[in-house]
Length: 451
Image (cartoon, rainbow, N blue to C red; front, side):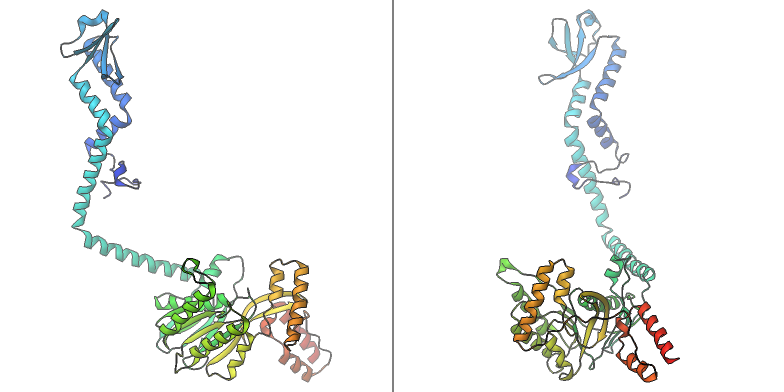
């Protein structure tokens, strides 16, 4: 292959120019004629001048006669017998020779002939290689497998992956797991790792609440990716991991429609969910993101609850499920359905500002912070204020108390001195929502109070 084909061949074998220079003498000759026709004619003209001694001899071309040799009248008597008179002019004569006609044929047909010859050589090469197909494919498969394993090993070393324990326990236990793509695409930002525990019976279904952009989808996807990576034989982006084998991973993430088939976004979502519930088994892993959001609030909540109950019920499905939702009413299922656990993505608010901590903590979120996220997205201030007013009116009409953004001071003030007050403040403290500096400040202040 290396001797026959050039290093950078064209897209199609019909285009020519893919046989390596020096492989076939005839291909090289035709190419030299094709690419250097004028040079070949000039060389022949010089050779004829030297052979005949006619200094005014020249080789020309026209569309009627093709290539010809022109000799002036003063040198007609020196023309060799091999020259064939073709045309008489006022000042001279024009002749042709067999050698010149052969060269003309080569020049005019060189392109077609060299393309056909190259394709013939390629066909011969292909026929010869066909006898070695099994060995070549086996070698290619071995190289591909080695390349894949080397790539997995290189990325594991570079990004500090761990070797997971893969077993048939049915448990997914991950310590300080990370998303392999997100952390690689944002090397300038600190990726916040998260723990995961999903048992065969306990904590089988996780209801994840929290605002948009907080990291719910990233967290669910990283769990699914780590399960997939472990089962193909790769290390995983975590400090430690024990991953029970799953038979399939099902996802329902994102919004899409199929207008050409007459299916709306909600119809596509429901079709995919129905396929998942019919196909999944108790050994499957389900990633469901905001089921029911494409219809009215109560319809969507009813569908989401029904799907959640179906997934959690061991008699129906009982699969390990990560279920992200903005229907906070579903968090009440933790106490009513076995195996269901509430989690939320922690956020911190200072006045009307919201900071995403990217940390998943036990418990349900109190609200979705949709208006704060809209403000971050650049919604005009008048629109933000109007949205708050409408939200308050709607919640009052429905008998729901408006939950304002909690104002959290940078430090907790301990007004009383004594061990009891420090313990009380410690119980109220949420370490997952504190920055390292805030935590150090609190510890220093409590130490002062105890002294």
